[in-house]
Length: 437
Ligand SMILES: *Cc1c(COP(=O)(O)O)cnc(C)c1O
Image (cartoon, rainbow, N blue to C red; front, top):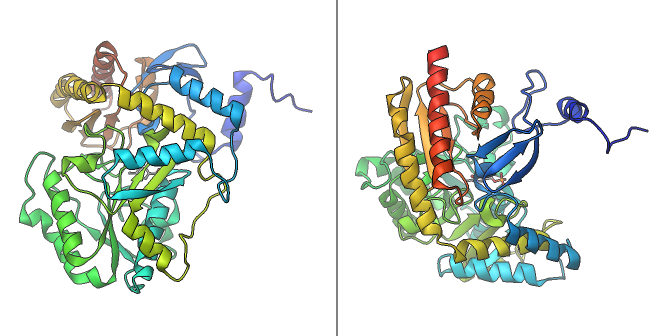
């Protein structure tokens, strides 16, 4: 029998290459992933002994850095009690406490929490809530969604259908995806007042389709994986007003922006608005385990349950997982007892000054920062095969996509490490330009 435990790195890397799917990977042009053996603070230790500064926070999630003592302790003590029990007919303190905390830290109208197992599921749950709400009001004709171009909401079927229709996966799956409506992405940058021209597309779509619209779904202020764009708070305020005027729900997908990343605890706060349904995920467990949540108002919840089904119709096997909830509670303790506002503001300043020299590199189209997010947009897509190892050689972990080289480091990154991260990013882009033009 194969000894699966005592194997060389070469051996298990071969297993990985032969059998494992990585995100958006191809068996025809496998890109060898870097093997990680451990992670602590803001550094990943690779299997070959090298250390890299993590500029990605594992896709927005590891806000406190890795191997955090308080989160480790929460995980260990919860393991001693129980790792998981089913949530149907049973409950436990970690889930109840997490629900109460999320209600306390989000807009006042949001009082009901569905604990989901991933971000995509949380968005699916939000869509289902919106549809069941309109069924409850006797308006099952309101079943379509309106999303923004350049949006990203997940990879499952219902969420794919509201991702950007061009750079998403619509053409591949168009026979099975529901046909929703798409407004032009807001062009007014963050900090500016939205023009009527910028409002025209979404205004026209809501005016024409409100009778069949269940909800507008958007990422407030920061469009993440669909383009790393920061847009006007005024635009968001006006979309909220349109939804009120035409009786359409507003779903805010804060899976990337939640828990301080944009400089506010939730990005909706930049606009002073409350969504009808809110999705959170990613940083919820400080990057330890997959967990997400969908919140709605008491009125929504009551209407959902007055409909034909008499209940909200969703219940995953691992719903409310105690281990994940206990870690989430610890992560919220760490976040809310820290001066995260100052940390994020300092990172924003560090990114602004550290990434500014990128503007001088030929081929750079734009450099922008908001909160603890820094983006360098290029004129041409990067060559992943050459740039990824180069970042690692320079001691940083970044994972660009398309024309976007971006960073959202753990909030705990020191000023020195942040300066190093920025300087290395610029060094690599300069080298790439010198070699490939
Ligand atoms: C990552 C992300 C999702 C999907 O979350 P998963 O946990 O990857 O399913 C949805 N919406 C936004 C805005 C995201 O950034």
